[in-house]
Amino acid sequence: MSGNGEIARNVLTARLEALEGPPLRLVEAPAEDGGLDLLIYDEHGRLVDVSYVPAELLEPAPLAAG
Figure 1: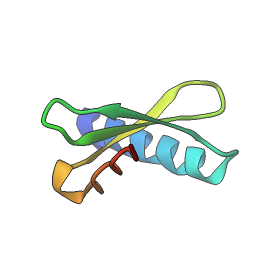
Figure 2: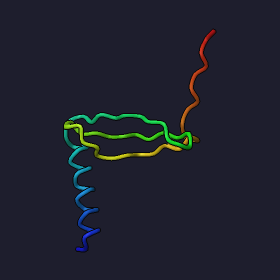
Figure 3: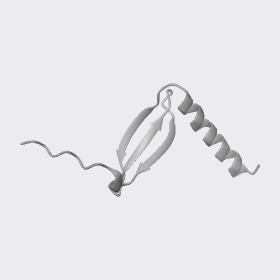
Figure 4: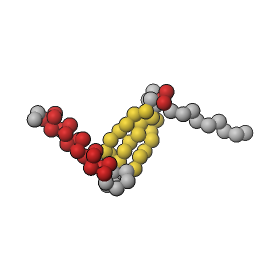
């Protein structure tokens, strides 16, 4: 297996182990284009994955009652 293939396999294995383990911590961060980055951390505080949600898929924020 090539170096890149080995790295990809290791990354996927770490993600799977994290998902099967204790609950993960999710942190939402605004993306530059108005979307949302979801940062996923394991129980040790290590970044496991980053997911991106485009702005078109986000629900609009509720209007403040006034």
